[in-house]
Length: 334
Figure (tube, rainbow, N blue to C red):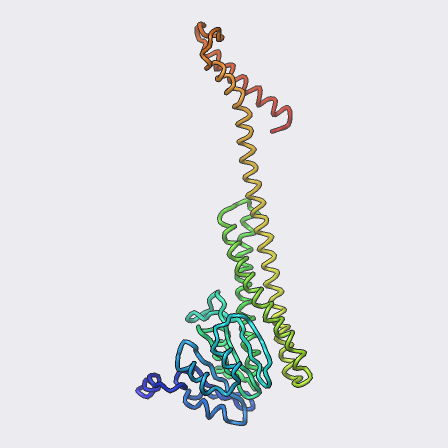
């Protein structure tokens, strides 16, 4: 325990690295101390995964001073650009991809960024906040899952991301079912706000998946002639993303249609209320005219000197209202 605390307090750049795993040719992995990162990267057999948390200044120093990658790769690994990208620079595949934020034991809904540089013998990943898919993939290593190549590990991360998005899409689909049932029962509450939030979330997910799918689809022909196994793996990743994106897009369209139906029902309710108000106005207008006439206080008003004249005037006003109501019914306005 004392040694671990001393390593943590050390100012050497390697102490800021989160994980170092050395993968053998058969895909089995061995976790190594962070101080052995340079030794692991220099080995010729198998491959090495290095994961870095950018919140630690020592880790950023290791990227700038010791990471065996190009300057452009260093800029991507430690950068702040949130745009999704995937580029090939020489023997390196450099990318920024989306992932879900890891909140303690489960994933949150917000999408963060995972940065990586991949070569034939190395994978370096960085993040500013904990990421869900990468953490699940790391846990699968502890259960014995094998990753013989860096692209297989990246494939595992994409798989976990697709599964997480799929579970989130299923949760939103269940919420849409509840909203739809309430709408069919002619009950309206806060469905408009709920659908608005769900539609915004689905739109954000759709944009992330679509951009990532297009990037993999674009890069696959560029490496098909040089590295066919890698090209096949990237094609498989693009297909997985496309499949999950279809489901997300379907839920987004469903949310849009339900939001349109909510708007239609709210418009119908508003129209019914305006119709009722219009009928009341039409029925009360003639009595109002009668009371206005008797309130003019001019000479020769009827019933001015007649006993019970007020009651006669009220009867005329009521008859005027009843006549207006009868005319509206006769004209099929009601």
